[in-house]
Image (cartoon, rainbow, N blue to C red; front, side, top):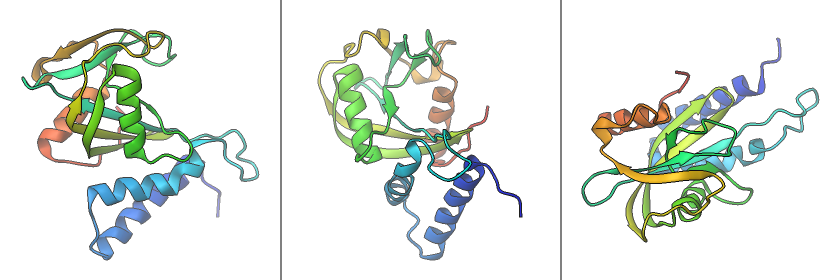
Length: 189
């Protein structure tokens, strides 16, 4: 049997986890998010299996934050090396020893000075070479402002139905999945 790539093995692992949860009737989004993150923490850095040195699997978190008028908070990326100049959600990479929900709350505080008090897992979006966990903040405090000026050039509130064309492409997809109440989507668009 031929050896697959690390990504193929991970996608197989996600499928096995979901099937196991369905069999045991514990298919719950929050449970899935936490179990998946726990199982994947060792994959967020370099792989230590022979022949796969240097393979990484980023675990990313993002959070939808809406104001009382239903507008979505977006920030313009800069200096990150990925989608710079585009409007994106507050987010970043999981750090060793933290859960995905704690990472999402930490990123909100660091990037936009918002303290998320209650967040809910919303969508899991595996992408080629990694996975993105998207949350929604239901309770938060603070005034949205740029917390990391080296990674963000502007911040603003936008109507979700009429996002600017320069929004990071997965943002409209995440909003669509939210409306459809779909929690899992393999994002390869």
